[in-house]
Image (cartoon, rainbow, N blue to C red; front, side):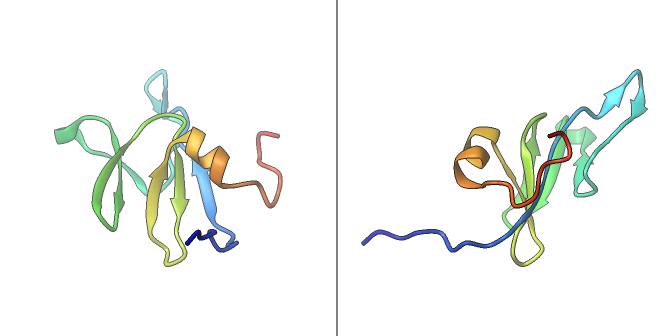
Amino acid sequence: MKYRKKPIVIEAEQFRAIYERGENVYAPFCVKKRLFRRGWWVKTLEGWYRVKLGDWIIRGVNGEFYPCKPDIFDKTYEAVTPRKDE
């Protein structure tokens, strides 16, 4: 059998530049700096996942967070409202 994803509306933010000249410019509240593992991480239902610039942080239907690579995000989702950068 084949299945189609149900059409639901999700919230997502793209992970962008964090520091400019030592100042904290922007980071979604769900992304944390984890010094002992180097880099930026988001806590998901399955544990901590590393995120990189350009990744999308998605809030799931139950309020959980998970990262998504830009190419997969573009193939899976379309904007319901225009993005802030458009």
